[in-house]
Length: 538
Image 1 (tube, rainbow, N blue to C red):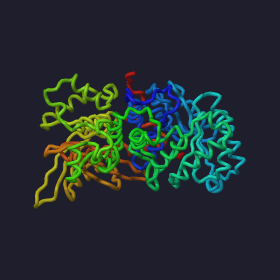
Image 2 (spheres, helix red, strand yellow):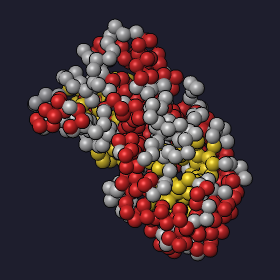
Image 3 (cartoon, rainbow, N blue to C red):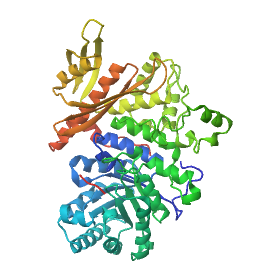
Image 4 (cartoon, rainbow, N blue to C red):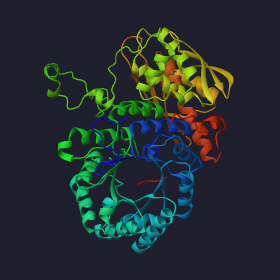
């Protein structure tokens, strides 16, 4: 359900939100998701009411093809598309992957900057024009929704760029994207590029112009908004701004900037902004990346006021220091919502309010875990529920699962841990000592898993307040040139740490098997489309 002021699909003048969390966002180190996780994120994107979901790059791997196929079948509202190079095999794979979509599309790209043509592609400008014409024409024979991207447009010669755009439109492209692939542009020049193309390109008024920006100079959102001011009516972005290097344009920042400063932009998106915070939390828990406290819109401090002057002003009149309402982006009020006496109906209803599809999880197991959590904690917050559901989603198809954990420590002895894991359903145990309880626990897990990755990052965050607060642990591990992230949440920080590492090792196993060209057997259930209620750059 969109906001009351949100434009309808029939409105000619609104900004389409093209979400590439599942494709460009996933290229961020440690952000890899399996098929089941991508479907869960895609359904949240549908609740957000985004216009387009770029589900992956179908030709890049069997896993990506399967992800695109499953997402295409799981959602009905947004256009679902696959990225594709100007190669016949890429286009064929992309078309096959979206064949079951209610609204299928394809996103074709080719670089247009001289530096890419000379050093990466070894192509002439004439070669590029020929490839663009052929690829777009080929795709247009099968689909109406065809987008073409001029990779590295911001560093391309504008006169040649205009020729490429003209040929793409003549061949049948409905959307033309001008990416700032390297994050090199600044708002004034990026905006002028769109104004120039709209003036010089033949057929410019017949298509939608799209912006795709990277955040290397911290200007992705500013550049995207500059494009909108100069006629772009599609912005390509990701939840929480995840993506390669410094990330992509942050979806939540663009959407709320358009809404908050409508006086400057004059256009809105169709996003249901109340689903922004649930989407942000869901993604963070899925990929095991902590949201910085100062992250605009969704960070813990985004609506917090510590300075006395600010507190006094907000208490007298909210608009003195707040330009948005937290409830407008779906931020929960951090109040008691459920307890040990709450029933299944209330539990399901609250999950729906938080943007969680009850049919996408093992509801019986989740409710049992909720009851167990109620026995441990006096207060159960929305954040507790989101963490609980996130853990349930992760464990559904894991080949490693925590069965038991015991740790002992004193000021005079070295900490020891005894860990029991279920490995493909079979319990295995190991004990180890270490420099602290967490280290001892990790050493025991390594012995059972038979792998000792490098722990690149380890962080702890309290999700809720109080001594019984739910702790959230995130870790980043690397092994055999693969880097993955893990996340775990529990009221006991050692257990949360164990869950985070186990989550990371499961992701590592998936990546290893996919790299070897095998479909992970322990993910067989996840590879089937879950029940529904209703390496490339650009």
